[in-house]
Structures are given as C-alpha cells and as structure tokens.
Picture (tube, rainbow, N blue to C red):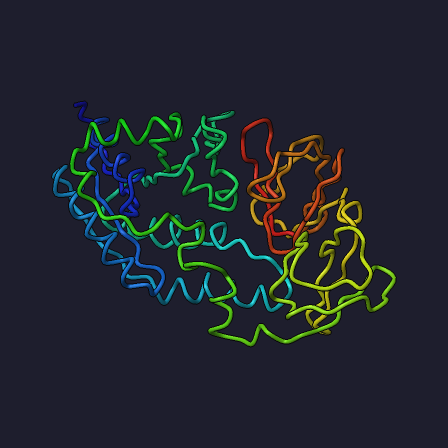
Amino acid sequence: MKQNNKKVALLMSGGVDSSYSAYLLQQQGYEVLGIYLKLHDKEEKHTIFIRNCEKVCAFLGIEFKIIEAKEEFKNAVYNEFIESYKRGETPNPCALCNPLMKFGLALNAALGYGCEYIATGHYARITTIDGIKRIQEARDKTKDQSYFLYAISQDAINRLIFPLGDMLKEEVKPKAFAALPILGDLESYKESQEICFVETDYIDILKKHTNVDVKGVVRDTQGNIVGEHKGYMQYTIGKRKGFSVKGAHEPHFVLKINPKENEIIVGKKEELATFCVTAINKSLPSEFIGGEYKAKVRYRSTPSNATISIQDDKIIATLKEPVYGVAKGQALVVYQDDIVLGGGVIV
C-alpha cells in the first residue's frame, strides 16, 4: 500500500460502489474518512445503510462519521421537488442535491474534519485541461453519471476523486467482493432507487403534500377540448398514457402542461420534436465561447450536436437534429467531446 498522507472524505451510501471506493482509496495511500449523509426521513433505509457503512469501515480500519442534514435537504432539495411539479415541471433532484448537499454541505464538513479531498462512488472521471480540472464522462458509458454533476463548483471539482471512473460497472462487483469479503454480509434494501426519497412513484410523495387527483381537460394544439386527464401533476412531457383523447386512432403524447388551468396539451409524436432548448445558466463560465458542442437534455439521452450560446443568464442550444420530450426542470448539460463544460435548468 502506498502512503501519501493525504486525507480524503468518502461519501458512503452503504452499497458496493462506495464500499469498494473506500478500499481503493486506502490502497492508494489516502487516509480515508467515511461519511454518511442523512438526507431523507426514511429511517429504515438509514439504519440498514449506516450499519453497512460501519461494517466496511471497521473492516478497513477507517474512521466513520454521520452527518445529519435532513432539514437542509428538505429546504434545498425536497421542497423544490414538490414545488417544481406544482409548476408543471419535471425536476431533477440529484442534479440539485450534488452541488448543494454532497459537494456543498458535505464538502464544507469534510474540510472542517481536516480533509483535502472528497470522493464518491459516482461513475465519472476528473481530467485536467489547460490547467483546469474538469468532469469527464466515465469509461463505462452505460453507467456514466457526469450529467448529474454539471452544477458543482470549481472548488469542489478541484478536490474531487472518483475511484470508479475508469472501471466498468460489471467488473466492480466481483473485484469488490474479492477485496472485501465482508460485502457478503451487507444487508440490501430493495434495488437502489433512482431518487433516494422516492420508494415507488413520485406521485406517492406529491400526495403527502397536495391533491394530485384533480381532473381536468385535455386540449389539442389548436386549443380544442379533446379529452380528460386525472390531474396535471401526474404527467410529464412525452407521456402517452393515463388520459383520454376522443376518436384518436394513433398515440398522443403530452406536449405541454398548463398548471394554472389544470390542462394538458397533447399531440402526435412529431409534434414533440424540439430544435431549440433554453435553460437558466447554472455553471457555464462567463468566459465560455459559443459555438459547436454536444448537449444532453435528460439523463438517458444521446448527446446531440448543437450550437450553444449564452444570452444574459440563459443558455440557448440550437440542435442539429430534433430531440423529443424536452421537459422544463430537467438539466441541459453542455459537453465538449466527453468533457462537461457546464449547464443549466431547462425553462
């Protein structure tokens, strides 16, 4: 084992990826401090995951701390998730949580604990271009999470380590179990959810705070009433089920949501096509030079070739090919090849 005397805070989830990250960092000679962030109010999950973290840290002989941040998470991420759906948007809570909680609040705590670096089990990489550290897509493109990291600060990027960035997801588990036999004793909590505080469906979360079952009218793009829906918050752009369209012989898709009138506007698939996407700029730097780049408008989408410019506080992406199902509240992330340059929230 190398010894470099550098202290790193590793954000641990209680799963295989972050557990193996702890092992890898230790092998690279870092002094590792394991940190578990208590963000949501699902205590059953926390109990299982904290127990897992404690087992791994004890096995490796590393320090472990728990940070209580439920109130901060509720104010910064959870409440915005609810309000975003009320506004007829489709929020991206992970992209909000990363800069504010993991690489904001937790980074500040880590610095207070004497750590120089912060690490996670994200599938992404850090690279240096012209002397500036940047986030780069993971080697494993099927698991790449760089899209969710677009808004974190340069100060955080400068301190970031992604131990799994150059590995394929499928090779992590066997290597992790070989290095950490204790992983076989860890408890699992269902499958890892995409959003940590959503157990089954986002609607179940919204129902705790607002009435989502308010029926309303469905209109076509000409403004004609063509059917009925169950409540506008139950729909996202591109959805094709759960509403009626009288006399329709082919699928109709949600094109627009009008929360004030509790209406949704629907149309055929070709009407979903978008060539221009506008976003409130969150992280493209002021020195950004407009031109030809790649842009992603949602996590599971292929990057599109686009002309990118900044106008006032907005990013304008003019796409070479149409994208479908662009939703307000999602992230527009700008890439140069596989390097994240920055992005914003789609409006």
